[in-house]
Image (cartoon, rainbow, N blue to C red; front, side, top):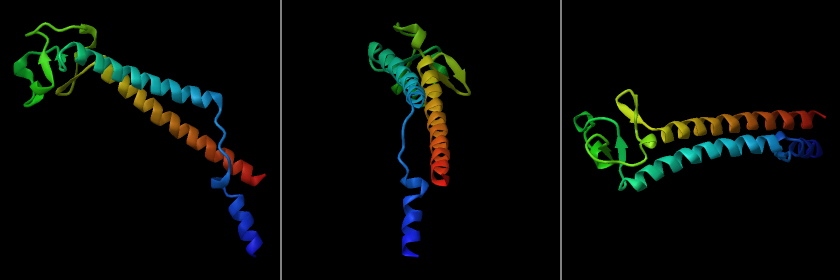
Length: 129
């Protein structure tokens, strides 16, 4: 009985080795790269604009407290106009960097989920054989 329990523990799917495939690493690396590019876009535009994000809206449209981290691109001169917060989403404005970060984060989560499902399937098949 004791030997049988030990064999069951050793053949558990959680005791199987995990081998990463090149394709899995490429998907994960690519997803992370998209997220990091989005973050770099947001950091860059803030650095060249004195730590604040330019927004393509008028100051009277700002939410309370938003002026601490944003300023109106219509009121002051701002650099890197293609990276500004310019796309309205509900009551907020988002930038290209925000979109890239969202896509990258979604892709990282989806990739990790698919890899985990694949690894569990592989481990179950290894235990069966």
